[in-house]
Image 1 (cartoon, rainbow, N blue to C red):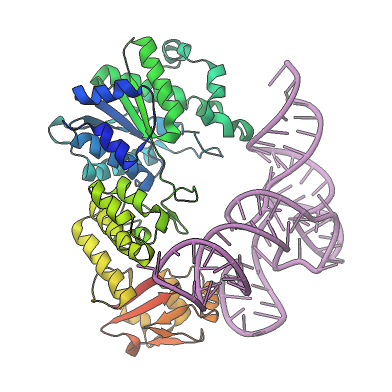
Image 2 (cartoon, rainbow, N blue to C red; image 1 turned 30 degrees about the horizontal axis):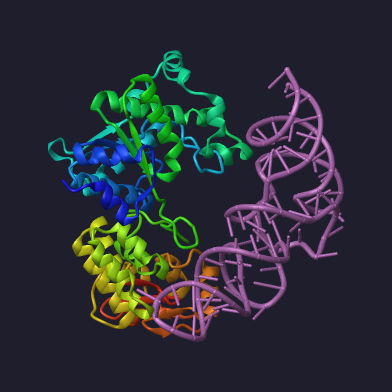
Length: 408
RNA sequence: GGAUGGGUUCCCGAGUGGCCAAAGGGGCCGGACUGUAACUCCGCUGCAUAUAUGCUUCGAAGGUUCGAAUCCUUCCCCAUCCA
């Protein structure tokens, strides 16, 4: 069995761990059951989640058994870690819905057949907790003094922290304990922001059960400036194709900073490291090739090969005048809506390229709009049926945003 | 529960009766440069018609005033100290 530790280390996943030597040995000798928690804060996973999912996939490939823990219970509280502000409370309906979305997405990446991986929801044990029992059984093992010293609460000590959120750490520690008892789960993985929460669980198991438990965290996916990746002007880059289209997804990775290409290839694709190193060392405009590979591979994993090809085709068509076809964001307009003609600003807002007519005016005034490859000089322009070539109009906002209008 | 300081446009943050759609910075968007990169420079950044006007906005609701982000009242929320 290949030691997955080496794989994770080589690809740059690992940030810190509780017991290095023991963990290495464990991976060598045993089929390890481990878990990663996902709090259902939205109705789709995002790139940050995806990084830990990749780690999980590497682990599973190496023969270990993942548990995906859905935070249907912890989501009721909200993890204060790294958050500057208090979280909004979510209703159970929303949480349950989000959990169901997560489950669906995870099954794309993790093989749940034949008990090769497990999916559980901590709502099952958290929502029915008895307060006093919980305090007596779990609460006694926690020192407030130590918790307050924890890094994860530092930022919140200035901004304020409610008792509700303060309890989050106990809940997560208790999760680990539950999974340890039920499934013999001995290891928790997570993003590095989870370090405090993870070690609190490790400690709890060691104390209460007298059994070994381990924790390991992964590097957060940040760009060369230290900002979290997977955020754009439009918000988060989601894995759900309804929320972030495969084309937009592809473009996001096609446009990463030169300096981040290698890291992304290693962390977010399954390409062998020799290939990653080769692509990562390309220089000058050559690095664009590496970016294409990154975007393609990643889109392939998250969506599928067909979508990846469509996105790549579309990108090539738009940026280098290559073959037609592919998937460009598109808006349909009914022929009767168009009537005889429609002014360009209406079309812009309809397509979502601009959020208001004023924004559209600015765009045109500054020379940032092209229709069918011709610059629009004034915002009085009226779109007519004749402007549709093969039933389509191509709008280009700035250098990089394309949108098709289709007449139906 | 008490005292004090706060809540301003995406974010930070000025603004204490008219010259405020509200300084400055960040971010976003657009332009130039380029490799669909980075850096740099310039422009832009509430909405609607228009190049002036109207409408909505400064925690919420009322009130004073010819006129309020700015004053008053009540309420909500946050921080710090005290209990």
